[in-house]
Image (cartoon, rainbow, N blue to C red; front, side, top):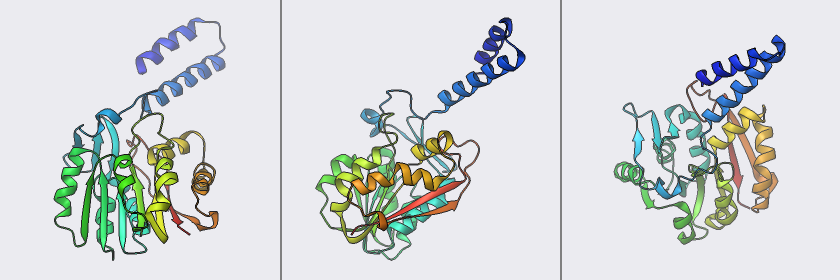
Length: 275
């Protein structure tokens, strides 16, 4: 990028612009190039066809997980993942987790008073780690291999006390978006079509989409609660959840400077009760 900016500087300097206008043009171009280079997805990019078989690249210190060069999870997320795990397991019973990653949330869920822990993971390398991890846990682990779109429709209705979606009781949903098109919306396909069916009455759903929320906080919002209210709550209400049963908790958890997908010092954990 520096080479491109240097060339631009020479072109603009040769033109008859004032110093103020010239500096503004160069600064705008630099920000645009930086934003383009730092985006997680290129326009139209779709990783889904190769994602399940792509290598799961855990670094030597087990602090970072990348798949196909995409940052999937990093160890600094631990306080936040523990918050989501605590929410998802707050009813005890049977918990469904979508997206295993580095076992950060999963290990916290296993430390709670639950009876069963169902985990969906599509990537082969991550699933191998899940199977090994599951053998040593105190509570029953049910590993399910496949894309959540393939696995979730055959799961029993009204079975779960909690869900955590991170793709990423209650449901914990934490899966990774696999294309530029579904970057900001992939969680809603699951929530609108499946979450209420899978949850018991009174069950709890929590989820995150850090790659999307990080981008929104970088370019559009300064208040994370406003971001959630405007970009998430309308979809949750459309999915059938009552607005007065949707609450959030904000924690301080500043990411490292080299994090590619999140730069805000605040993180938000939703609690959505199924009534």
